[in-house]
Length: 183
Image (cartoon, rainbow, N blue to C red; front, side):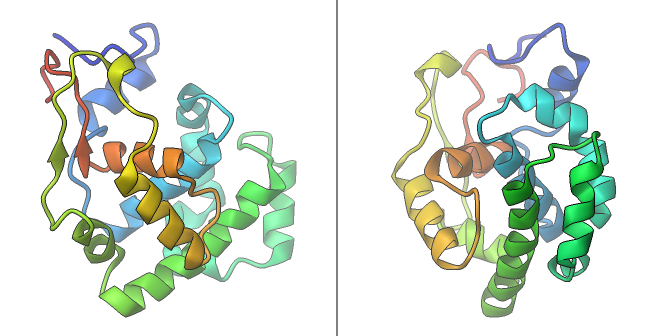
Protein backbone atom coordinates (compact mmCIF):
# COMPACT_ATOMS: atom_id res chain seq x y z
CA UNK A 1 0.00 0.00 0.00
CA UNK A 2 1.37 3.42 -0.98
CA UNK A 3 1.08 6.27 1.51
CA UNK A 4 2.21 9.87 1.64
CA UNK A 5 5.89 10.26 2.43
CA UNK A 6 5.30 12.02 5.75
CA UNK A 7 3.75 8.90 7.31
CA UNK A 8 6.15 7.39 9.80
CA UNK A 9 5.90 3.68 9.14
CA UNK A 10 7.28 2.89 12.60
CA UNK A 11 4.35 4.55 14.35
CA UNK A 12 0.97 2.82 14.00
CA UNK A 13 -0.76 6.05 15.13
CA UNK A 14 0.59 7.83 12.04
CA UNK A 15 -0.55 5.03 9.75
CA UNK A 16 -4.04 4.88 11.25
CA UNK A 17 -4.37 8.67 11.26
CA UNK A 18 -3.29 8.95 7.63
CA UNK A 19 -5.39 6.03 6.40
CA UNK A 20 -8.59 6.71 8.33
CA UNK A 21 -8.69 10.45 9.06
CA UNK A 22 -6.24 12.77 7.32
CA UNK A 23 -7.81 14.45 4.33
CA UNK A 24 -11.24 12.89 4.81
CA UNK A 25 -14.05 15.41 4.37
CA UNK A 26 -15.11 16.65 7.80
CA UNK A 27 -18.49 18.32 8.26
CA UNK A 28 -19.25 17.69 11.95
CA UNK A 29 -18.73 20.79 14.10
CA UNK A 30 -17.52 18.84 17.13
CA UNK A 31 -14.92 17.02 15.01
CA UNK A 32 -13.85 20.26 13.35
CA UNK A 33 -13.48 21.87 16.78
CA UNK A 34 -11.38 18.98 18.06
CA UNK A 35 -9.14 19.11 15.02
CA UNK A 36 -8.68 22.87 15.28
CA UNK A 37 -7.67 22.45 18.93
CA UNK A 38 -5.27 19.59 18.16
CA UNK A 39 -3.62 21.60 15.40
CA UNK A 40 -3.22 24.50 17.84
CA UNK A 41 -1.68 22.25 20.48
CA UNK A 42 0.87 21.12 17.90
CA UNK A 43 2.39 24.61 17.54
CA UNK A 44 6.09 24.06 18.26
CA UNK A 45 5.66 20.30 18.76
CA UNK A 46 5.50 17.16 16.66
CA UNK A 47 2.26 15.67 15.39
CA UNK A 48 3.36 12.39 16.98
CA UNK A 49 3.25 14.07 20.40
CA UNK A 50 -0.30 15.26 19.70
CA UNK A 51 -1.49 11.86 18.52
CA UNK A 52 -0.02 10.22 21.63
CA UNK A 53 -1.89 12.67 23.89
CA UNK A 54 -5.10 12.88 21.89
CA UNK A 55 -7.23 10.64 24.10
CA UNK A 56 -6.14 12.46 27.25
CA UNK A 57 -7.06 15.78 25.63
CA UNK A 58 -10.50 14.39 24.77
CA UNK A 59 -11.03 13.44 28.39
CA UNK A 60 -9.72 16.76 29.70
CA UNK A 61 -11.98 18.75 27.38
CA UNK A 62 -15.25 16.82 27.72
CA UNK A 63 -14.86 15.03 24.38
CA UNK A 64 -14.65 18.51 22.80
CA UNK A 65 -18.24 19.33 23.62
CA UNK A 66 -18.14 22.93 22.42
CA UNK A 67 -20.70 24.26 24.91
CA UNK A 68 -19.06 22.56 27.89
CA UNK A 69 -15.58 23.72 26.91
CA UNK A 70 -16.81 27.29 26.38
CA UNK A 71 -18.03 27.33 30.00
CA UNK A 72 -14.91 25.88 31.62
CA UNK A 73 -13.74 28.00 34.53
CA UNK A 74 -10.24 29.31 35.08
CA UNK A 75 -9.98 26.86 37.98
CA UNK A 76 -10.84 23.91 35.72
CA UNK A 77 -8.29 25.02 33.15
CA UNK A 78 -5.61 25.64 35.79
CA UNK A 79 -6.20 22.16 37.23
CA UNK A 80 -5.25 20.71 33.84
CA UNK A 81 -1.72 22.04 34.38
CA UNK A 82 -1.27 19.08 36.76
CA UNK A 83 -2.31 16.54 34.11
CA UNK A 84 0.90 14.99 32.76
CA UNK A 85 -1.06 13.13 30.06
CA UNK A 86 -1.65 16.35 28.10
CA UNK A 87 0.50 19.27 27.01
CA UNK A 88 0.62 21.54 30.03
CA UNK A 89 0.90 24.85 28.26
CA UNK A 90 -1.31 27.38 30.01
CA UNK A 91 -1.89 29.57 26.95
CA UNK A 92 -2.88 26.56 24.81
CA UNK A 93 -5.27 25.29 27.46
CA UNK A 94 -6.93 28.69 27.80
CA UNK A 95 -7.02 28.98 24.00
CA UNK A 96 -9.22 25.88 23.92
CA UNK A 97 -11.91 27.74 25.87
CA UNK A 98 -11.48 30.92 23.80
CA UNK A 99 -11.78 28.89 20.60
CA UNK A 100 -14.94 27.19 21.87
CA UNK A 101 -16.46 30.58 22.58
CA UNK A 102 -15.47 31.84 19.11
CA UNK A 103 -16.89 28.63 17.60
CA UNK A 104 -20.22 29.32 19.30
CA UNK A 105 -20.33 32.84 17.85
CA UNK A 106 -19.50 31.49 14.38
CA UNK A 107 -22.21 28.84 14.72
CA UNK A 108 -24.69 31.53 15.70
CA UNK A 109 -23.74 33.73 12.74
CA UNK A 110 -23.42 31.06 10.02
CA UNK A 111 -25.61 28.23 11.32
CA UNK A 112 -22.57 26.00 11.79
CA UNK A 113 -18.80 26.20 11.78
CA UNK A 114 -18.93 23.72 8.91
CA UNK A 115 -20.84 26.19 6.75
CA UNK A 116 -18.43 28.98 7.73
CA UNK A 117 -15.21 27.10 6.94
CA UNK A 118 -16.39 25.35 3.77
CA UNK A 119 -17.78 28.60 2.34
CA UNK A 120 -14.19 29.72 1.80
CA UNK A 121 -13.93 27.05 -0.91
CA UNK A 122 -17.49 27.23 -2.24
CA UNK A 123 -18.08 23.88 -0.52
CA UNK A 124 -15.67 22.08 -2.86
CA UNK A 125 -12.29 20.75 -1.69
CA UNK A 126 -9.12 22.01 -3.31
CA UNK A 127 -7.21 19.03 -4.74
CA UNK A 128 -3.51 19.70 -5.18
CA UNK A 129 -1.34 17.65 -7.51
CA UNK A 130 1.89 17.00 -5.64
CA UNK A 131 4.49 14.28 -6.01
CA UNK A 132 6.13 14.79 -2.62
CA UNK A 133 4.94 16.30 0.64
CA UNK A 134 8.26 18.16 0.67
CA UNK A 135 6.91 20.29 -2.18
CA UNK A 136 3.86 21.43 -0.20
CA UNK A 137 3.65 24.94 1.20
CA UNK A 138 3.43 25.51 4.93
CA UNK A 139 0.67 28.04 4.27
CA UNK A 140 -1.14 29.71 1.39
CA UNK A 141 -3.33 32.74 0.70
CA UNK A 142 -6.42 30.85 1.85
CA UNK A 143 -4.92 29.81 5.19
CA UNK A 144 -3.70 33.37 5.73
CA UNK A 145 -7.17 34.76 5.06
CA UNK A 146 -8.90 32.26 7.36
CA UNK A 147 -6.31 32.68 10.12
CA UNK A 148 -6.77 36.45 10.02
CA UNK A 149 -10.55 36.11 10.26
CA UNK A 150 -10.44 33.52 13.05
CA UNK A 151 -8.08 35.72 15.07
CA UNK A 152 -10.42 38.66 14.56
CA UNK A 153 -13.21 36.46 15.93
CA UNK A 154 -11.19 35.65 19.08
CA UNK A 155 -9.51 32.35 18.20
CA UNK A 156 -6.01 31.65 19.50
CA UNK A 157 -3.16 29.52 18.11
CA UNK A 158 -4.63 29.75 14.62
CA UNK A 159 -1.79 31.13 12.54
CA UNK A 160 -1.67 30.51 8.79
CA UNK A 161 0.53 27.41 9.11
CA UNK A 162 -1.76 25.89 11.74
CA UNK A 163 -4.79 26.66 9.59
CA UNK A 164 -3.17 25.15 6.50
CA UNK A 165 -2.59 21.92 8.44
CA UNK A 166 -6.17 22.06 9.69
CA UNK A 167 -7.50 22.51 6.14
CA UNK A 168 -5.48 19.51 4.95
CA UNK A 169 -6.55 17.31 7.83
CA UNK A 170 -10.23 18.25 7.50
CA UNK A 171 -10.24 17.51 3.77
CA UNK A 172 -10.75 21.07 2.58
CA UNK A 173 -7.36 20.82 0.90
CA UNK A 174 -6.42 17.40 -0.46
CA UNK A 175 -2.63 17.20 -0.26
CA UNK A 176 -2.26 13.43 -0.52
CA UNK A 177 0.66 12.76 -2.81
CA UNK A 178 -0.14 11.68 -6.36
CA UNK A 179 1.20 8.17 -5.70
CA UNK A 180 -0.76 7.75 -2.46
CA UNK A 181 -3.52 5.11 -2.54
CA UNK A 182 -5.65 7.39 -0.32
CA UNK A 183 -5.74 10.40 -2.70
